[in-house]
Image (cartoon, rainbow, N blue to C red):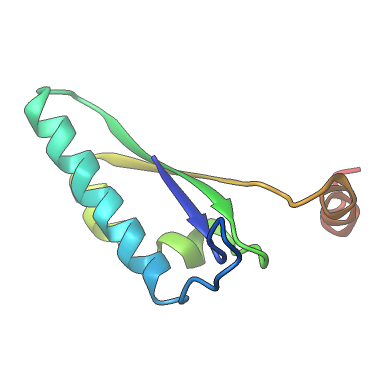
Length: 96
């Protein structure tokens, strides 16, 4: 599991370049755990708390092939900062 955020708990900005690195590190962890446990499947789960929502293709594009080759599923959940933002996205996407 990885939590992706653009601010620290003290309000400092997290450089955007750290997000792809964190995701790559998460993939490495998932591959290592899968191998150590002799598991058939594994997943990298990311809780996306960035201000601006990215789609999964953009977020995981740099590891997609490696994850597929290692049979690691990629899951992302975007955590909205408030219910108003969630409602706004639902209306925008037509899921309301």
